[in-house]
Length: 113
Image (cartoon, rainbow, N blue to C red; front, side, top):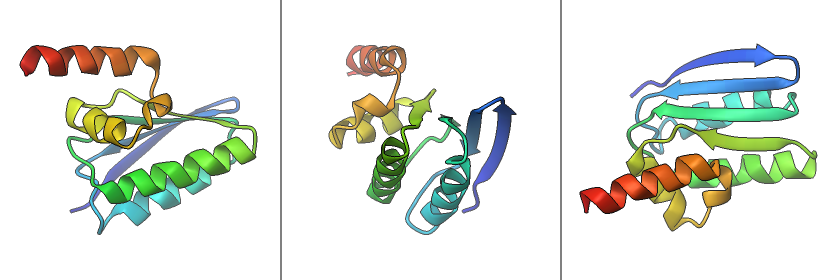
């Protein structure tokens, strides 16, 4: 399955939006896009269009987070769907998300059982 990417660049900030299911076979595409985004100081990964990720994506997010921190940059995941938040939460990577996105998704999850 293919992923679709779009970018919005402003000053030293980039918002990289991705659409599609991110699985082992296409996670490298995401990693490549995020590596390119590291030239910016503030990187946002908009995952509103991502209904599902595998554990391979957690590895990618961890690698990018570590690189960003080493380079004194900010990397955040924004607008994740509930299934994505659940997987990120299982990996104890809630810090990747804004507090609002995380709390909002937790509330939805608790309400839906």
